[in-house]
Image (cartoon, rainbow, N blue to C red; front, side, top):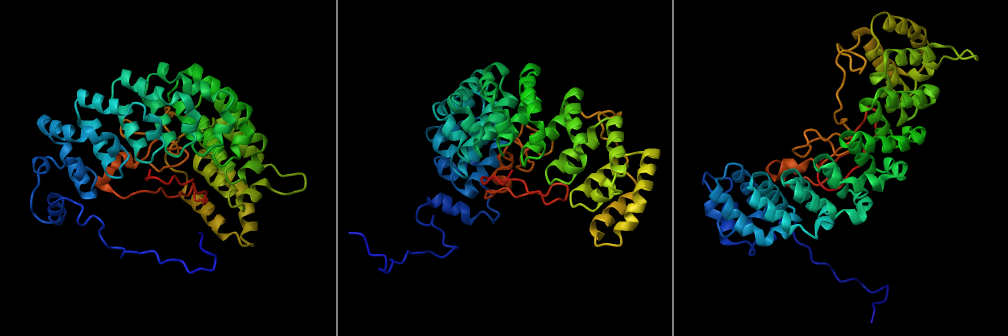
Length: 447
């Protein structure tokens, strides 16, 4: 019979925060190892034989195994592998055990890697959607041979878009695009047809689209780009879509870049004062041609019919002033001098009002001058197609150590492992261009 709503609830037993729940459960060997972890006693892998699985699931034990695996000989690796194999699937989703499995994929021989990957069969989708398992799947895709890569990704075919939209699964799809031969992941491209707008404005889908634009064959990229251009004006102002358009501007072909910049220049003032679109305007200034920059400057320095100055409106705007700063950093020589002269009357006007913070940043750039480099693809140091910092996966052979963000490719801690930060389980927000544009948090590990 249910208790009436006014009945007192039974107290829930609690334990002190620092109470160790493993006491009485861990083996004598592991307890001894943990108590000696800060002493001078030296342990080797042979000292934990027959306890490898237990050590793998312990924070300190996992860290020890990871370190030793990097220099272990083939006999030591084989002993570890034999003990771990029967429990490999369980360890793949364990907060500490997953790192040991990853290390085996890195340092094991091809037979050991093949056996581990075999144990993932029929479980790839569930592993990909799990916060620790997804790291193991990524590591497997990096280290197994092409035939097993194909077998692993094939299990995602039935519901690849579900995986793309998952906070953990999206990293696996990105890794598949980066590392698996195109013929085995064509189903991913096919699933994106007619879905590009939806996915480009999704916090995780936008990452996968950027990977496609980096790694897939030109005709597959063209399919995605065709859909992107149809909705580019909406993507520019979108919280996540703006990263996709930035990617096209920075890494795309000149003709694709020109299409985006044409939209920017048509709505320059409005987009420059928009929280998300202003980042795209800055990318247009940085990676556009000299002629495209001139067109932007001409718009900003032309007075409106009512006598108002677009330059002044931009300078005092919380986002627009960053666009002005970007121009000051990119313009050179006479062009920059003329732009500064156009700004001076506006600076005098704005100093009469409370716009000190924005004006101070602009004045600093005016007097210190532009940075001694030119990132424009039209310049001598043309940028090669590399992952953009927000979606970046470099160096992807090892899982990324970059911020887990709309541009990030992998889960940073996949590489870092418990050797560096065993308990890292959240990613923090990031301020973009100082604009307090906080990137979405992916609760799982830090990326």
